[in-house]
Length: 275
Ligand SMILES: [Zn+2]
Image (cartoon, rainbow, N blue to C red; front, side):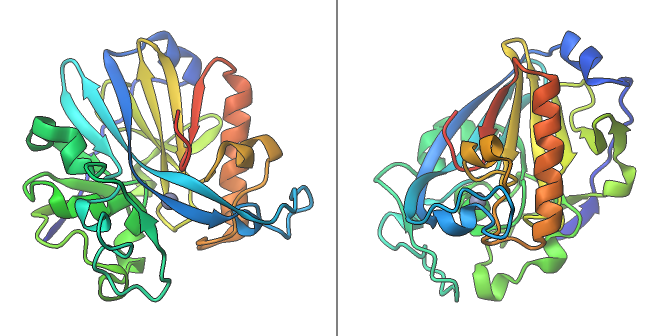
């Protein structure tokens, strides 16, 4: 595996108002590649003052987002699950967390992408957790994978599964090269035409990113795991389970909530919720 620096171009935009006034021919379709049962106590940080303190569990979808750009081609945001979870809830990985994933037949990312799989220009990963990248095992190895700096260093493939095995090139995005467009101190124009943005939202993991898709149908915010479910946004309480740094995770959620309040018409999708 070759690791390179993802080349970022400086955008010509200075505000989200002007970005959203210039939408691009880009659209996003969400695939559910499986599901997982999560604890509500921990989906909301129980130590947060506004924590709803609900207990119990909820089954949530495991997602991958297929992005089509009329001029620049097709991309994937997270890879979801590959087909090995249909017969084995651990996908063949002996993880110490013993996370069980549920998958129906033909729900895996490769099956749902069909012929589009071989035509992907790149896969952007929000972060390196199995439910967001296991699908890479079934995708062509020539497709470059792009992720935030810090993810590779923190990940232990021997423990959690080597999902990027045989991928030819992994590009790291260096957050010091990101630009500041209020209210975000660090964001990046991924394709160089204002159509697809990465927002640095650390906390869930060190190099976690969220996405903004600036399409003709209106802007869409994909929070990824800054919010597991929509209620993280409505309560204003970030998850604490599976979280690298709970305080930073809350700061990133507060920042996204601020953005959502500024742009009321924007479609907002949580990391484990269908749009
Ligand atoms: Zn997740």
